[in-house]
Amino acid sequence: MMTETLLAFTLFLLIMVFIFWEKQRSPTRTFVLGLMVGLTLLVKGTNVFIPLIVFVYLWYLLIKKTVSWLNLVTFVLGVTITVLPWSYYASKISGRTIILST
Image (cartoon, rainbow, N blue to C red; front, side, top):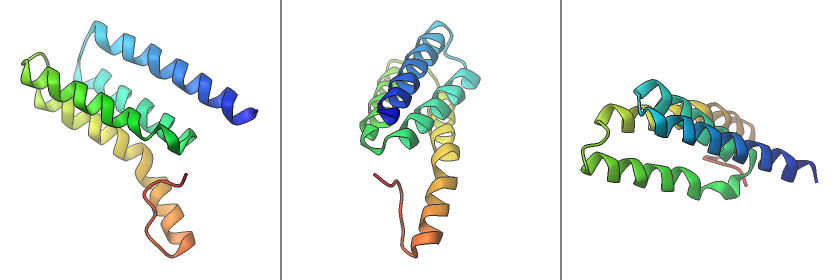
């Protein structure tokens, strides 16, 4: 029960950050969006589709020239900074490569 509550809370925060980002698509807000997507990914590994959906949406906006490459790079950087430390720790403890434990 506790993980579902935490998941619902992080999804709510992700939606709020996404709305905040839509109002002004600056690289700083894109980085915060990436951090929040990474955090949501760490809460429940089955949310692996969320970064893909946001990345595809950013790519679509890039093609339409609504956002710049900097936005795409800062999003990926935000997700990576959030997920990479956990992946390193899990890989070191288990002795094998773990990108995201589910």
